[in-house]
Amino acid sequence: MADLVAAAKASGEGNVATLDHASGVRTARKTVRWPLAAAIACAFIATALIAGRSQIEYWLTPEYVTAVGEQRSITLEDGSVVELNSKSRLRAHFEDDLRAIELLEGEAIFRVSKDPNRPFRVRTGATDIVAVGTAFNVKASDSRTVVTVLEGRVRVNQRDAAAQSAAGAAKAINEFELAVGDQLIVAKAQPAIRVSLRDTEKVTSWTERRLIFEDTPLSAAAAEFARYSSRTIRIEDPSVAERKINGVFDATDPASLAEFLSGDESLNVRNEADGWTVSSR
Image (cartoon, rainbow, N blue to C red; front, top):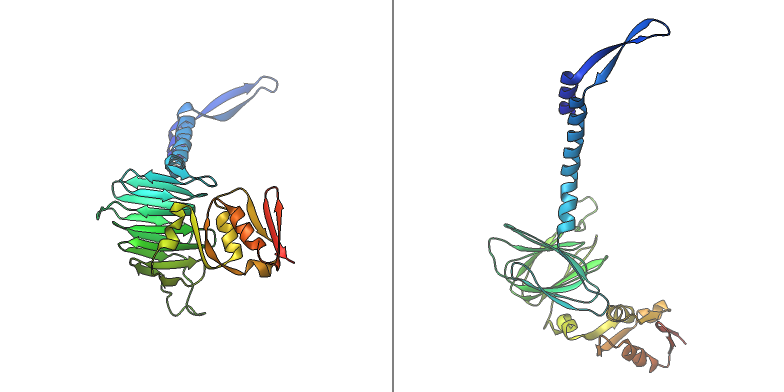
């Protein structure tokens, strides 16, 4: 742009002589002709268009959102199917050589249509997931991402892998190949945890609006229920929040968990307008 402005100045400047009638002194002033002004305007417009292109593409990218308690089945333009859980949000971007999904928050199952020439990529805050023809569950929050493979294989890259030594001499392992039943838990600035599951029923039970808890902290169980109902369960005592619970619940019925906790004589469960508050007696 600077070269364009300079060229316009070189070709567009001129001198105009004027007479000050009061003093009789003739002075000269420079004017900028219209070609220079037009060149500068065009240069600024071009710069703005280039800078705004990425923002325009961002606005035009399809976004899918689910409200509290809502679930959606979405067929993407390549034929892949996404089962989007409650309180989730994702963005999809497709080109001739690209299938890119950004799971901004929440949970989804991806059933990927095979296309070896165009890998299917899912990005969350901490991971990049690559698949060709497979099915996998991704649960993403601000603090961590959990990837579970249901069919086929996927590759997961931990973009924020922690260094393995203070000096950084050893490179952290940040790429994983996962097969059916493998689960990878990735938290920011921490080493990833790989788990082999006997079955994936617990992971996908949300598609049937069931919540399966196995030695699950009460705080985590309450957070899961909050995805499906505006009536929430609040844990006032930190020691109570860490208690482990087991059981199968209807995801849309938080009252069932409140009733379950009311049977514990060591707990006080208060029924309030917007939910329940749990504390130690």
